[in-house]
Image 1 (cartoon, one colour):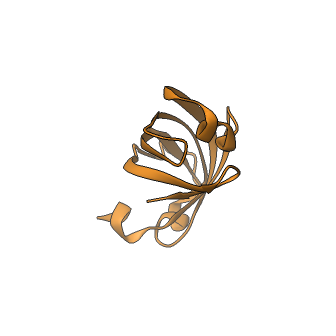
Image 2: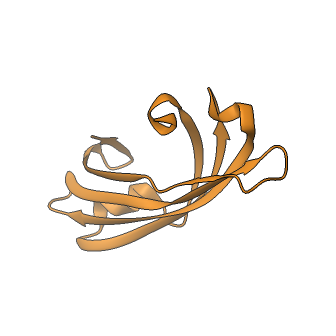
Length: 105
């Protein structure tokens, strides 16, 4: 319930450049490290979060691909307790209107 009521802002440092995935053919992986800032109810007990993600992507053409993202993000407790962890899952598609811009759905 808390997860549904909380918005999490994540800044991702990608292991590979996203614009390169439009020109690559077939199946490949992207990965990243996340810095998460808690907001809403989560910010009452957590100061910040760290996590990692992996994203397999399958290009069906130079303009479109299917993707999935999963990982783990841990939010550290303000009072030194155990904190809380989340495993986000995203399944979607990317569309590349130009070689350097993508839209994710």
